[in-house]
Length: 87
Image (cartoon, rainbow, N blue to C red; front, side, top):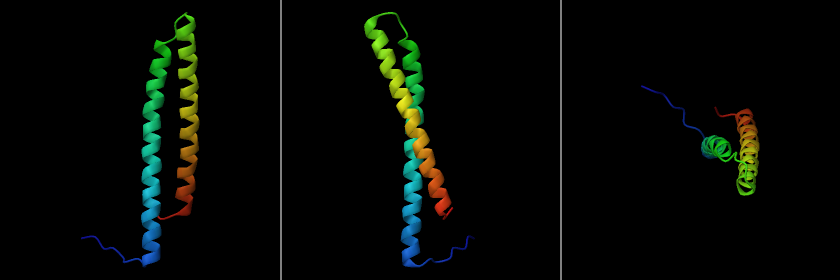
């Protein structure tokens, strides 16, 4: 049987907010990871030698870079959250 200590109302609310924030950050990172993987495949598929497809390739590469930057940013937020505590 598990034993759980009853936390005060204020700390319980903070703990709930911490877990909710962590869950949302992890969900966002997972979604961005999926999008980045799809963008890699799309960028490779669009690497043709026509102006329209070159433009599409450049756009997909830019989107992939932006997704990677957002993943890095969210990963930093997750590290900050871990430093706050509760885990």
